[in-house]
Amino acid sequence: MPEYEPMSFHLATARLTMQPWVEGDAEALRELHAERGGWTPTVEETRGIIEGGLASAAETGIALLPIRRREEGDFIGYCGLTVGRATLDEPEIAYELFKRVHGNGYATEAAAAVLEAAALTGRKRLWSTVRTWNTASFRVLDKIGFERDHVTTDDRGEIVWLTRALP
Image (cartoon, rainbow, N blue to C red; front, side):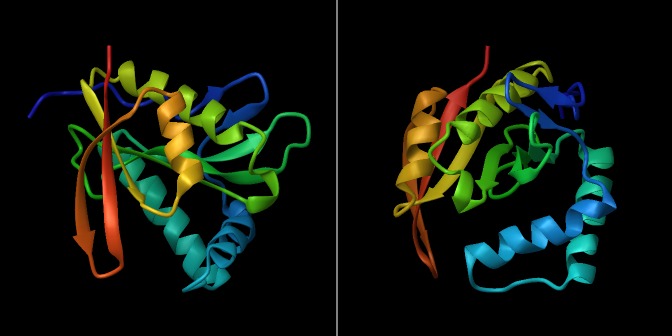
């Protein structure tokens, strides 16, 4: 297996910062899960999700990072790399933001920073998987150069696989 540099866990853009999770993020992450619908973890379960993510980041060198707006300092979502449905060699880029901040370009800005960080690890390709109804995610991925590769189906419907080569 090829050796990769760890992804930077401290990313900044003109309007956003992304750094490792802290325990105080549990309530905000729980609210984001609740907004998504379906299962909402307890605060304790959310702390476990954060602890698991930190442990995984230490082991794999990739992570999903909380996104905060620089001026407001508020948690608005997360973005980063994960194995997800892909592999550690070719991980997935993933992001999720509160609906109240949609339409401001934050997801694109965060994803572009993660894409740059991913390229610096030495990886050659990233994936993203998106449900067919998620038009906003398709727009973000299109803006940062992802292209459709194939479609699979699971018990919840179709999943579009997109890919992007890294420099």
